[in-house]
Image 1: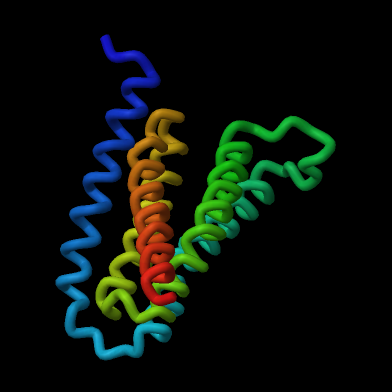
Image 2: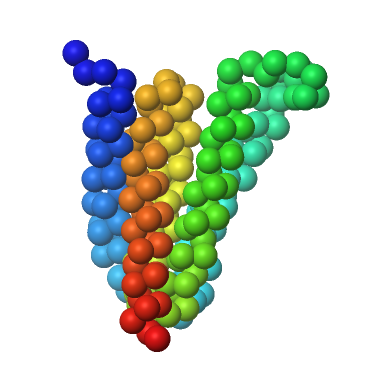
Length: 166
């Protein structure tokens, strides 16, 4: 029997592998994108922003339906706690991903298609994290693994490109 930690590592690895495959395939799909790299970098942030907006709207809707209008005064039901954690984690990941992606775009070290692919994979990874977390706490692992790959991969690539531009 696989314990929860090993299951989390295995599921995260699957998510990271899927993110890598998605990035390659989407970069090829968007290879002909005729955008300036910096424009592509900013445009690539929109899918993630849309996912975050959907999370916030869903949270607002759940709070309205549940009648939990004062979260400081009562214990929120699990769906509200999960939603808040998903939003918080997505903001944390976006705070790392967004400047790294824009830096990579500004340094012109990635094609427009690759930048667009990274942004879309980030958004898809956050959706996978959200849906998985709603289903079961271990269900968030593939989305987290995918997110870590795209976020840290973009950060390391941007830092490397920046160092080589000095």
